[in-house]
Image: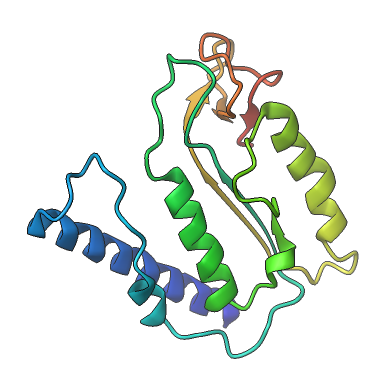
Length: 171
């Protein structure tokens, strides 16, 4: 089935990413603290999409830096988002116009995150339920300081007061 194929392709992709990271580390070509360059060979080794999937919609949110100096950077967030975006288009046949946000460098504040997921995404979903929906988040997550409920942490979140007003619920 398509779901099994997607899962198998994703596992192959993540294994290849891990192998490349290990190879770079073993060869000591780069320090681990520096950004590891994306290697097109990873995607070239996966099967290309045989047909387009115009009904598919994706949201890829990458938060690598935060307004608060108290929140550490997520070094590979942007790179991971680029890799996932390319995987969706090249391997799974997603239309690039159906991957949100369109600007992959958009600074993701809590307001932008909520608008993207609650307003923009639904506009792309087909009313007959035939849309494939893929959501990918890379960045920090944190529990609410009030209830311990898990949240995605946007760029402008105050880490001392994580709640529904300044973060996005995972549920």
